[in-house]
Each structure stands twice: as C-alpha cells, then as structure tokens.
Image (cartoon, rainbow, N blue to C red):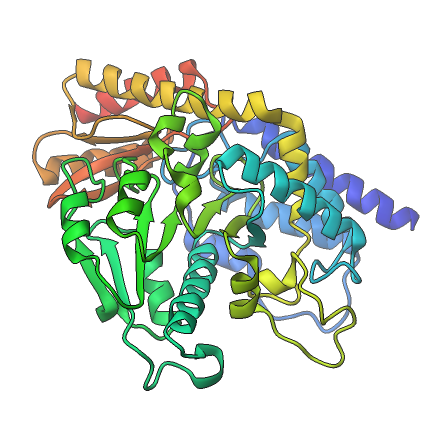
Length: 450
C-alpha cells in the first residue's frame, strides 16, 4: 500500500504539473506521429513492469501529443477544462473504483447523483419531478431522450415498441430543424427510425427554428419535435414556449448540450423561456460546467417513461426491481460514478458561480467579436451566447487563416460551414479564460490573417 500511495502521489504531481503549464504552453504543436506511435508501440513485454516505471513511461510517451484543450485559449469546440474540485473528485472516484449502476453497488454514488441531479434541475429550469440520468455526453443524452420519446408516442398509439419493435408500428413523425446537431440524426439511426424519418423544419436568419414552418408541419399522430438550445454554429436558441404552442400534442425534446446552461444565468435565461414545458432534455457537463470527460445529463418529465424505455432486469442483478436513478436511466451497466465530479463542481461554483461562468464566457465571446471586427474580420452571427463565426473574405482565405492559427499555437479553433460559407468557429467555455487570453488570441488571429 505504501507503493500505491507513492504511485498515486506521483500521478497527481504529473497531472498538476500539466495543468500548471496550460497558461503558457502552445495550445497545439506539430507532432511527429511516427515518433509518438513508436513511443507507445513496440511488442508487448513478456514479463511485468513495475507500476512506477509504467507511469513514467506513459507520461514521457504522451507529452509530445497532448493538446492543451483544458487551457484558457482552446476555442475549437464547446468544451471546458475541468474545475479544480471536479478534477480532484474524479481522481477520488477513480481511486474509490465504484460501479455506479445502482445504490446497492455504491450508496455513495447514488446519493451524489441524486443531489447533483436535483441541483442541475434547479439551475436549468427543469421541473423538480423530472428524472435525471448521468450519461457519457450529448450523444447518449439525445439517444436516451429520444428513446423515451419513441416509447411514449408509440404507447399512446397502442404500440409496445420495446416488445414488438418498429416493424409494423404506427408511423412516427420526427420534426427537427434543418440546422439540428448531427447527434440527433445518429440517435434516430440507432433507434431504428433512420434519418429519413426527419421532416426538416426551416431555420431563421440566425439558426433558430422557424415557428411558422413548425406550426404548418405539426399535426396529429405520433410526433417527436427536436428543438435546440444553442445552435452549434451561432448559439441561437429556439423559442421553446412558442414551439410548445405550435406542436402542443407532440413530444418535445430539447438538445441543449451547451445552450441549456444559459438558463442558469439571469442575463441569458430569457433565451430559454418555456424550457420547463418540454418532455425531455439533453445537456453536457464537460462543456460549460467544466467537469472531466465523459459527463452528460438526460432529463425526462415522465420518469416512468424514461425507465420504461431504458431499464432492464436480470436475476443476478442485486438491487434490480425498483427503478433507480442510475443504471435504469442510462445505457450502461458498468458505469463510472461520474456524479462525484458533478457534485464537486456544483459545490465549488454554487448557483452564483455557475451564473458568473456562463455570463463571463458570453462577455468574452462578444469581446472576441468586437476586436476581430475592428481588425477587419467579418462576424456572421449575432453573438447571443458563447459562439462567434468569423470570416476573412472568401472561403479559401478563411481556411488558410484557420490552418495558420492551428499551426501557430497561440490558440486553437476550428472551421465550420454555415449557410454555404466557411468560417472560423470560436467557442468560449473554459473557466480559466480571461480577457487577456481573448486579447492575446485575437491579436494572433489578426496577425496571421495578414
């Protein structure tokens, strides 16, 4: 046990050293892929290697290929860097090695998820009576939410989809924005609907769903409507209250991977007016809450429908029989106790801290847009949340600027195509990002654009 204690202390030291380097190291750098593969590769040793030596070998091999995604100038995707308390809690969770399938396997993990789920619903404006499942991310959250939708709308039509499958089932209409996230389509594939089930609804100038087109297409019969809180390119949010009125008899699922966090900040909560009227919601924790991967949440206004679509029973599963808030609401049986890190992040920030984090990222996104526009860049979207779309003339030049930025290392961001044009896509969601980081990054972008 002394050797294990020393090993874990060394691992924590190496991790802390990496975190301490994030503010100053290049966000990304050129990688010798052959050397990186060689450092990890080679024949599997015949005999054992001491754990301490393994740890040092791993740290040396990985270092050249680590990207500073947890740092303050990574703007490539809507992902944060894990908060201190959440990081430490995840280390503890790994050390405790708990299986978070149910309260029999880990009463502590169950209690942490119950408390964190309650706090999340309060912050996000979701009814307290809704179920909360701790999943791997936005894809799993959308898949589980739409599985619950499938279960409910077909049960209402007299069809047991869990027993009888989709062959011969009543047709289910799926209405979703033409600018929906791709995880919605993949969820529909996995659930047996296929992507042809989608009836695209027009999107307005900033990417929010066109309510008139939604109202025209909504009707009777089994219907699922997929709405968006936070367009992946522009940050625009669908009018949830009006959409509920336009499709009053449909199951409303909200894909709010990052945008759902706007409800936690008084300055942006108006964008999510009517969020409580939906039937299911998807959200990510490793985005704006800044907890370690993999962490997502799915909520359902009808817990019995949620469990009916997802839960399973087996004689050997001790504790099975009553619906739990853990394995019965997610797609995994052997699952990490990810609620510990979420609980720790919410305790560290508190209600005011979550609001301030969201508000600050939105302010920094506006600062990015203002600075880049003053330097001659084109800003394509209204910056309502943390997303900024930037162009430098034609598509070829914009892509060239993106390539230079990614090779420069000052910051990292990716490109996207929106409305047929290429843009730099900036996402600000890291708790460490400051005005100085934005100014330094914007200056580098403008320099590289010349």
